[in-house]
Length: 575
Image (cartoon, rainbow, N blue to C red):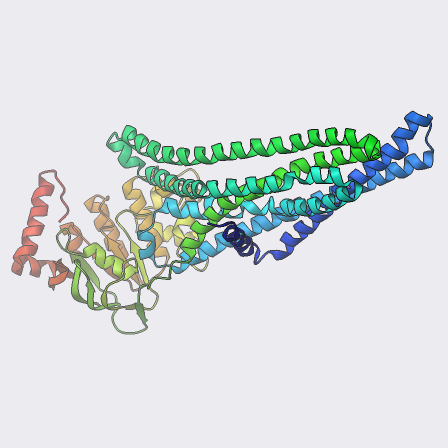
């Protein structure tokens, strides 16, 4: 990439980051400009103090009070303005940086919210978190030093004019370092770009791997795979470490060289100044102001380098953010809502390799059990109804009000029981209604026994609760949502048969009309349904009552009998 391309890329980066926050950014730049001018003027004040106060005091023995006060007032005034410039620069640079971060994160969240659930199923949660946090922070990191770096440009220009007007020879000596600094920065940036990109990519990979490892901690512990998992994370961390080491090595060499250049310049100025003191009639104050000014701009010179070194870091972060923002909005679930007709109607629903032109109608208030062998498409059909899977073809129509789904592995938030129960409610609900829902789902007693009852904070994913307790809370949450359709995906698998039967009976005897579609495996649950739909090979093989299917369908009867035999033998195998 050429120097011109890098400059253009840097300009585009800053334009993107500040497009909605130009005001605080340019106020920070203005404050930095005031600081820059005052920094240069402070050398003029020093020259005045040396020539008008210090030298006369040593040579003549006394200095007038008015002269001292005027010189002192000049130094203090310039110092106060300089301090004000620093405060404005830092305050508004911080405002611009974090507002830009907020905007980027907001854009990402909005984009994610527009994507269907199927999009999230293909993405790593850790990677998404990394892009929202570390990548967003990296993208805006250049905004903090940039106003200061811009003030250094102003400072160098004003200082160059002042030094050349004071003494041409010493001015040229002072300014000879500027091309060297520029070349050094360009060479550094050219070499460090790819290492920053790689480091940012590996940081995202590490975040994904760690999140996945934490998510699967139960599996890791159960199989004694701690060492293997540690080695896997260590390999990912090593790739990040390697990329970061390359960056650090380049940066340390760059900064050491940048440190050396101003020191060399000061030595040269002192040598040339000593020679020019006699030959050109320079005053002590002028030589002092030269050295002082060069000392003042030595550190800001590093800020140019720091800002330039942050550019590839910010660009790498912004590239990863924009990569996600550039992804097109995928087609979402086309679930139709109907105010009349059946509660659920599927027409010709097809999903390659799973569902084969499936037709199903469930009337309002009906209790339907969905039964079938493993791989028959039961859970996929549930996900089609909830919009988490988009079929290749077909029509899905549900009753107005929507579907409340309870999966076999319910998700609970690391919040209070109350928060978890009311997550699907758009309007308020009182404790009596919550207690009623918990009672129907046989969860009232164990919730009452929790330390703070409904306000007890449970761990992430309901850690600390048994599988049956989590399932009962998830059932109560679906009930509290007051949706007309409840789809239960083997939801009561962690409950004993008697508790399961009691909950199903209480759910079906509620005063308000609820349509139930239950993915079931237990004969006791299946027998409670008014109709059984037997799914096989992604198609409806048969349907009727449990007794009818047991009598006429060999495949259904064999599956149920096999389940009963396994259960009696102490082995529970899902059909």
